[in-house]
Length: 327
Image (cartoon, rainbow, N blue to C red):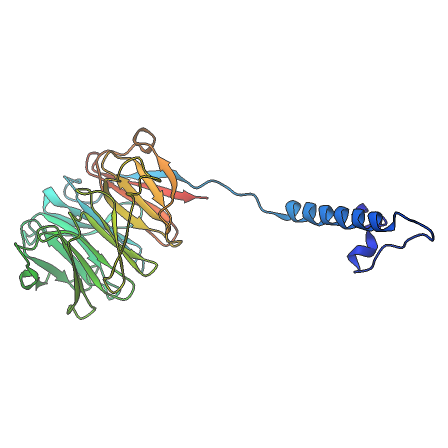
């Protein structure tokens, strides 16, 4: 680099530039050297800086499930099993639950024998226990090793003991990395949290009208399209400031149907109008995808895999659209 061969070189060795005898402008010359060397160092840092790419979504494909006795009919929920690389979808109006690979080919279909009645929410544990909520039921069905070829044998997880004002109405399910089960109960406007042994840890009350629940970065996020915004709680259930309602950041409170949290703690939220918002942990709006750009048809649920692929279940299109998070 040629600049290092100039008289500025002594400054990089921590030395002062030589001054000529009788030079009355020595002090000014030294100040000039300091200034110029600072510019050189700043230029070097700018040259080494990496470019910053904008955050966005790239549409990868639209999955039309196959290998089932019927296509998707009014699906309402899905989840992704990271350990087994499987997608699980509640095929609600067909009264089935489909287990599929990433290409959308069904490897197993539950409910063919009339064992499921309008499944509406689903979650899976690391042990391979599949948890299913059914429309109008105040209980959950649990099947062990759901992906095996064994017969469908369910046990019932009763939720009636968690009533507050009315029957429990499960609107969403989520299982965190510690095996805790989060149940969004729209009937009582609460979140029920059970541990890995299915014992009650705590209940979070007055959460509005919960449509979805997710955890990440030590927090619990609950979407509330009725009152607007995202209700936020600590992992112990303590209330934290609500997100998506600040007038200084959002023109109006966000009306979110479903949400997911990526590995960096960012919240990806699908609005009721089919648009997508991305919010960081400080409630800053990072990115917006307008409804016409998203191309979604009545999205009802979403999930995310370990490679930051976003899966959006579209009830209007009876399909799963896959996006890749780009940045």
